[in-house]
Image: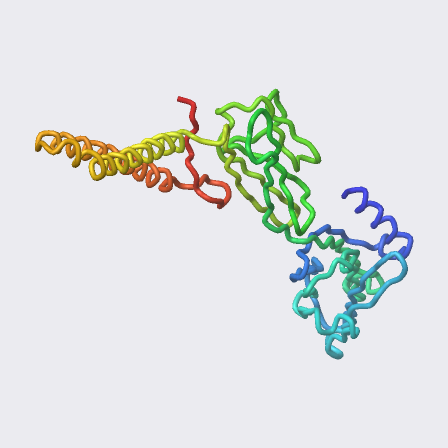
Length: 315
């Protein structure tokens, strides 16, 4: 970036020697693509009799944006900038609208008659504009989907070019270590020798000079977490109990009532059936409560993905 700035300033010196000789200062700014940016001329005063001019400098030529003989007539824009620029007479600032990538470059403000003690001296101010695209919300892709020994998380940005990319686990930044490996300019995070302590929310933060975006991804270790295992076990018990209850009903209807007609056997079969049904209902109730508790957990501070269980099976 600094090399580009120095190169641009050196080129301006060759194209416009007076700008180098009389230049007051330069400024490097960033502008968001398809938005507006204000080019301030750092002017103390604008008075009648001055001649103000904004120009755009590229590698091939100098393009006039506007010319304003102050106090004589209104500012005159060139056709290209007439409907996408706003000029502020009070301080000489220029606002560009609907920025394009081609608008990146050097903008030069010159004022003739700015110095009362030296009317022939030219006031020059350079604004170096770098148009950047606003970053879109990134996407985290996990490979493989089911974690066994190792996993890789890739942070993908569709629009814009990130200048910096960071990874977080919870509120702690992730760096290269014996477990974590960052690659491809930090766009990938590889985790090897995965343990249950590695499960949780991983957040990717992308940023450039004008924008910053976050996204979070919940990493499931061994496929199932603490509450999910309990839900699975109770659901299986409930399923088995329900199957046993249906078997008991079939036994009572098709076999028990015909062979054992005594009231005491019917009572025993009925009690056994009720016990199995109660066991089934209790297991379903426990599984439902765990699901409600699991779904009620809040998402982490970074990102806005789904809300799975935040507890890991680490005892």
